[in-house]
Image (cartoon, rainbow, N blue to C red; front, top):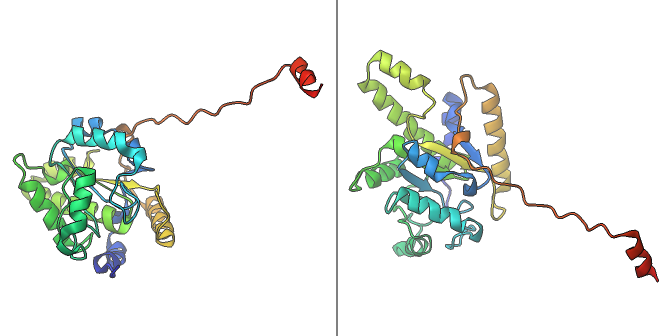
Length: 255
Protein backbone atom coordinates (compact mmCIF):
# COMPACT_ATOMS: atom_id res chain seq x y z
CA UNK A 1 0.00 0.00 0.00
CA UNK A 2 1.37 3.49 -0.89
CA UNK A 3 2.56 5.83 1.84
CA UNK A 4 -0.18 7.78 3.57
CA UNK A 5 1.37 11.24 3.30
CA UNK A 6 -1.44 13.04 5.20
CA UNK A 7 -1.03 10.53 8.02
CA UNK A 8 2.75 10.92 8.07
CA UNK A 9 2.37 14.69 8.46
CA UNK A 10 0.19 14.36 11.58
CA UNK A 11 3.15 14.35 14.06
CA UNK A 12 4.05 17.89 12.96
CA UNK A 13 0.56 19.06 13.92
CA UNK A 14 0.83 17.16 17.21
CA UNK A 15 3.75 19.38 18.21
CA UNK A 16 1.43 22.40 18.09
CA UNK A 17 -1.83 20.77 19.16
CA UNK A 18 -1.29 17.37 20.81
CA UNK A 19 -4.93 17.03 21.91
CA UNK A 20 -5.91 16.41 18.29
CA UNK A 21 -4.89 12.78 18.92
CA UNK A 22 -7.32 12.27 21.82
CA UNK A 23 -10.54 10.32 21.29
CA UNK A 24 -13.70 11.26 23.16
CA UNK A 25 -14.59 7.60 23.75
CA UNK A 26 -12.41 4.46 23.76
CA UNK A 27 -13.97 1.02 23.31
CA UNK A 28 -12.81 -2.45 22.45
CA UNK A 29 -15.31 -2.80 19.59
CA UNK A 30 -18.64 -1.35 18.54
CA UNK A 31 -20.64 -3.82 20.65
CA UNK A 32 -20.00 -1.44 23.55
CA UNK A 33 -21.76 1.49 21.85
CA UNK A 34 -25.33 2.37 22.69
CA UNK A 35 -26.50 3.76 19.36
CA UNK A 36 -29.98 4.61 20.63
CA UNK A 37 -28.52 6.78 23.39
CA UNK A 38 -26.25 8.47 20.84
CA UNK A 39 -29.27 9.25 18.68
CA UNK A 40 -31.18 10.69 21.65
CA UNK A 41 -28.15 12.90 22.40
CA UNK A 42 -28.43 14.47 18.95
CA UNK A 43 -26.03 12.39 16.87
CA UNK A 44 -27.72 11.61 13.56
CA UNK A 45 -24.94 10.31 11.31
CA UNK A 46 -22.01 7.91 11.54
CA UNK A 47 -18.70 7.49 9.72
CA UNK A 48 -16.97 4.12 10.14
CA UNK A 49 -13.56 2.84 9.21
CA UNK A 50 -13.57 -0.61 7.61
CA UNK A 51 -10.46 -2.71 8.32
CA UNK A 52 -10.18 -4.00 11.90
CA UNK A 53 -13.20 -1.94 12.86
CA UNK A 54 -15.99 -3.72 10.98
CA UNK A 55 -14.15 -6.33 8.91
CA UNK A 56 -11.03 -8.45 8.89
CA UNK A 57 -8.35 -6.40 7.05
CA UNK A 58 -8.61 -6.70 3.26
CA UNK A 59 -11.93 -8.56 3.49
CA UNK A 60 -15.36 -7.16 2.68
CA UNK A 61 -17.61 -9.21 4.98
CA UNK A 62 -18.77 -7.94 8.36
CA UNK A 63 -17.15 -9.65 11.35
CA UNK A 64 -19.82 -12.13 12.58
CA UNK A 65 -19.46 -11.07 16.22
CA UNK A 66 -20.87 -7.59 15.49
CA UNK A 67 -23.75 -8.55 13.19
CA UNK A 68 -26.50 -7.70 15.68
CA UNK A 69 -25.06 -4.37 16.84
CA UNK A 70 -24.39 -3.32 13.23
CA UNK A 71 -28.04 -3.98 12.43
CA UNK A 72 -28.99 -1.87 15.45
CA UNK A 73 -26.73 0.94 14.22
CA UNK A 74 -28.30 1.00 10.74
CA UNK A 75 -31.83 0.91 12.13
CA UNK A 76 -31.05 3.72 14.58
CA UNK A 77 -29.46 6.21 12.21
CA UNK A 78 -31.48 5.32 9.11
CA UNK A 79 -30.78 4.88 5.40
CA UNK A 80 -27.91 6.95 4.07
CA UNK A 81 -26.83 8.31 7.44
CA UNK A 82 -24.12 5.67 7.96
CA UNK A 83 -21.14 5.51 5.59
CA UNK A 84 -17.78 3.77 5.30
CA UNK A 85 -14.67 5.91 4.81
CA UNK A 86 -11.72 3.63 4.16
CA UNK A 87 -8.15 4.16 3.05
CA UNK A 88 -8.56 1.25 0.65
CA UNK A 89 -12.11 0.87 -0.67
CA UNK A 90 -13.27 4.03 -2.41
CA UNK A 91 -9.81 5.54 -2.94
CA UNK A 92 -7.79 5.85 -6.15
CA UNK A 93 -6.33 2.43 -5.31
CA UNK A 94 -9.77 0.91 -5.83
CA UNK A 95 -9.78 0.66 -9.63
CA UNK A 96 -13.27 1.09 -10.98
CA UNK A 97 -14.68 1.18 -7.46
CA UNK A 98 -14.96 -2.62 -7.44
CA UNK A 99 -14.00 -3.04 -3.79
CA UNK A 100 -16.24 -0.14 -2.73
CA UNK A 101 -19.16 -1.82 -4.49
CA UNK A 102 -18.39 -5.13 -2.76
CA UNK A 103 -18.07 -3.53 0.68
CA UNK A 104 -21.28 -1.56 0.15
CA UNK A 105 -23.10 -4.75 -0.82
CA UNK A 106 -21.92 -6.75 2.19
CA UNK A 107 -22.27 -3.98 4.80
CA UNK A 108 -25.44 -2.46 3.29
CA UNK A 109 -24.15 1.14 3.48
CA UNK A 110 -22.52 3.58 1.03
CA UNK A 111 -18.73 3.68 0.72
CA UNK A 112 -17.42 7.21 0.28
CA UNK A 113 -15.35 7.86 -2.85
CA UNK A 114 -12.40 10.11 -1.99
CA UNK A 115 -9.08 10.85 -3.69
CA UNK A 116 -6.85 11.44 -0.65
CA UNK A 117 -6.18 9.20 2.33
CA UNK A 118 -7.53 9.99 5.80
CA UNK A 119 -7.01 12.38 7.57
CA UNK A 120 -6.51 14.68 4.55
CA UNK A 121 -8.60 17.84 4.43
CA UNK A 122 -9.84 16.87 0.97
CA UNK A 123 -11.22 13.66 2.49
CA UNK A 124 -12.93 15.75 5.18
CA UNK A 125 -14.41 17.91 2.44
CA UNK A 126 -15.81 14.79 0.73
CA UNK A 127 -17.44 13.67 4.00
CA UNK A 128 -19.03 17.09 4.50
CA UNK A 129 -20.27 17.16 0.91
CA UNK A 130 -21.91 13.77 1.32
CA UNK A 131 -23.79 14.57 4.54
CA UNK A 132 -24.81 18.05 3.39
CA UNK A 133 -26.34 16.54 0.23
CA UNK A 134 -28.76 14.30 2.14
CA UNK A 135 -32.50 15.15 2.05
CA UNK A 136 -32.17 15.92 5.78
CA UNK A 137 -28.55 17.20 5.98
CA UNK A 138 -26.36 16.09 8.88
CA UNK A 139 -24.14 18.74 10.47
CA UNK A 140 -20.58 18.25 11.73
CA UNK A 141 -21.66 18.24 15.37
CA UNK A 142 -24.25 15.55 14.66
CA UNK A 143 -21.67 12.97 13.53
CA UNK A 144 -19.86 10.15 15.25
CA UNK A 145 -16.60 8.97 13.66
CA UNK A 146 -15.51 5.45 14.60
CA UNK A 147 -12.16 3.91 13.77
CA UNK A 148 -9.21 1.95 15.07
CA UNK A 149 -6.36 4.30 14.14
CA UNK A 150 -5.37 7.48 15.96
CA UNK A 151 -3.39 9.13 13.14
CA UNK A 152 -6.20 8.72 10.62
CA UNK A 153 -9.68 8.28 12.12
CA UNK A 154 -9.33 10.17 15.41
CA UNK A 155 -7.22 13.01 14.00
CA UNK A 156 -9.71 13.40 11.15
CA UNK A 157 -12.62 13.62 13.60
CA UNK A 158 -10.82 16.25 15.67
CA UNK A 159 -9.89 18.28 12.61
CA UNK A 160 -13.57 18.45 11.68
CA UNK A 161 -14.39 19.34 15.29
CA UNK A 162 -11.85 22.16 15.37
CA UNK A 163 -13.07 23.62 12.08
CA UNK A 164 -16.67 23.45 13.31
CA UNK A 165 -15.73 25.07 16.62
CA UNK A 166 -13.84 27.88 14.87
CA UNK A 167 -16.79 28.60 12.59
CA UNK A 168 -19.21 28.55 15.53
CA UNK A 169 -17.03 30.90 17.60
CA UNK A 170 -16.66 33.29 14.69
CA UNK A 171 -20.44 33.59 14.43
CA UNK A 172 -21.19 33.58 18.18
CA UNK A 173 -20.92 36.31 20.80
CA UNK A 174 -18.07 36.08 23.38
CA UNK A 175 -20.45 34.77 26.09
CA UNK A 176 -21.88 32.14 23.74
CA UNK A 177 -18.35 31.02 22.79
CA UNK A 178 -17.42 30.63 26.48
CA UNK A 179 -20.54 28.55 27.18
CA UNK A 180 -19.83 26.32 24.16
CA UNK A 181 -16.27 25.71 25.33
CA UNK A 182 -17.46 24.64 28.79
CA UNK A 183 -20.14 22.21 27.64
CA UNK A 184 -19.73 18.44 27.94
CA UNK A 185 -21.05 17.95 24.42
CA UNK A 186 -18.27 18.03 21.80
CA UNK A 187 -18.54 20.87 19.28
CA UNK A 188 -18.14 18.61 16.30
CA UNK A 189 -17.95 14.87 15.64
CA UNK A 190 -17.70 12.44 18.52
CA UNK A 191 -14.34 10.70 18.02
CA UNK A 192 -14.66 7.02 18.97
CA UNK A 193 -11.54 4.84 19.08
CA UNK A 194 -11.82 1.05 18.83
CA UNK A 195 -8.77 -0.45 20.52
CA UNK A 196 -9.42 -4.13 19.76
CA UNK A 197 -8.23 -5.79 16.56
CA UNK A 198 -9.92 -8.63 14.68
CA UNK A 199 -6.60 -9.55 13.06
CA UNK A 200 -3.14 -8.37 14.10
CA UNK A 201 -1.85 -5.65 11.78
CA UNK A 202 0.64 -2.77 12.19
CA UNK A 203 1.05 -3.65 15.87
CA UNK A 204 4.15 -1.48 16.37
CA UNK A 205 2.32 1.60 15.10
CA UNK A 206 -0.70 0.74 17.25
CA UNK A 207 1.56 0.52 20.31
CA UNK A 208 3.03 3.94 19.50
CA UNK A 209 -0.46 5.40 19.06
CA UNK A 210 -1.60 3.98 22.40
CA UNK A 211 1.50 5.38 24.11
CA UNK A 212 0.86 8.78 22.56
CA UNK A 213 -2.75 8.84 23.78
CA UNK A 214 -1.65 7.91 27.32
CA UNK A 215 1.04 10.62 27.34
CA UNK A 216 -1.22 13.38 25.99
CA UNK A 217 -4.01 12.39 28.39
CA UNK A 218 -1.61 12.49 31.32
CA UNK A 219 -0.40 16.02 30.53
CA UNK A 220 -3.70 17.50 29.33
CA UNK A 221 -5.60 20.05 31.38
CA UNK A 222 -9.34 20.53 31.60
CA UNK A 223 -12.22 18.19 32.24
CA UNK A 224 -12.17 14.96 30.20
CA UNK A 225 -15.20 14.27 28.06
CA UNK A 226 -17.67 11.97 29.81
CA UNK A 227 -18.57 9.35 27.20
CA UNK A 228 -19.67 6.64 29.62
CA UNK A 229 -23.33 7.43 28.99
CA UNK A 230 -22.94 6.23 25.41
CA UNK A 231 -21.64 2.79 26.40
CA UNK A 232 -23.38 -0.49 27.07
CA UNK A 233 -22.48 -2.72 29.98
CA UNK A 234 -21.48 -6.02 28.41
CA UNK A 235 -21.69 -8.86 30.95
CA UNK A 236 -18.62 -11.04 31.26
CA UNK A 237 -19.03 -14.58 29.97
CA UNK A 238 -20.11 -16.98 32.66
CA UNK A 239 -17.35 -19.31 33.81
CA UNK A 240 -18.68 -22.75 34.57
CA UNK A 241 -17.32 -24.23 37.75
CA UNK A 242 -16.27 -27.89 37.75
CA UNK A 243 -18.87 -30.22 39.19
CA UNK A 244 -18.34 -31.33 42.78
CA UNK A 245 -18.62 -35.10 42.95
CA UNK A 246 -19.76 -36.86 46.10
CA UNK A 247 -17.08 -38.88 47.93
CA UNK A 248 -19.06 -42.05 47.40
CA UNK A 249 -19.02 -41.49 43.64
CA UNK A 250 -15.21 -41.25 43.66
CA UNK A 251 -14.98 -44.55 45.53
CA UNK A 252 -17.38 -46.13 43.07
CA UNK A 253 -15.24 -44.87 40.19
CA UNK A 254 -12.02 -46.34 41.64
CA UNK A 255 -13.66 -49.71 42.22
